[in-house]
Length: 295
Image (cartoon, rainbow, N blue to C red; front, side):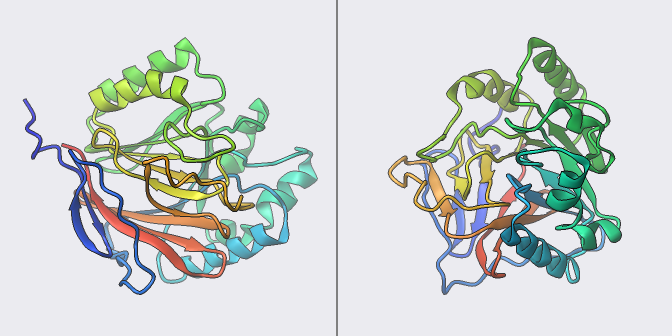
């Protein structure tokens, strides 16, 4: 039987180590505090996370340039897309303007994008080669030994998908289990916010099979949720626009949040720890930390 100490989730933020199990914590990185650095270890799994990105607007292109600039010093090879991948029309020229052109430098360097389907994304996106969805609306892949990621279609959480997810989680021997999807189980968004119905379905599976981290999009801002039952949840939804003033900071959920500009998240899994930096369109690191996997 696990003890509370054995499953305690430790987050290293700029103000120090905080025990996240038990009493909720609310710790935001101070503007003048040092950033938790990504180690850039040779053998680590490095990746980026981006949600609601496919606007085709100038701001999206500028954030894409920040992503390319980071990769010059932090050699990530994978980007997780959290839905809102192509907003509006999905003609061939839309895929060029809203995806291929903004991230051209990354694509030319062989970076692999892995997409989850969002509310307004068509089912046909699963066949778009550069989204690497393996022809499925939900799928799993292992980018490195001991790490397995699960992409879910939260727009249509069918019984077949739930059965598939439980089977895959049960069969997985990976130390790190990371889930990414569009709809957030927890969010302080005023306009959309937490999807309580989805939480009732998925959270018991995440707890039973030792999922450590969950990335979601949908809400147009960045939020790191105070760990819930030892799981760390992120909302990374400001890849194409930011909805200023949409975060309800009285929700009691927010550990850190940013809604004044576009952002993406860069992360590195090395051993039992995952480090992350959240970077704005202006190149500012607006949040950072380190989490230990659940055991």
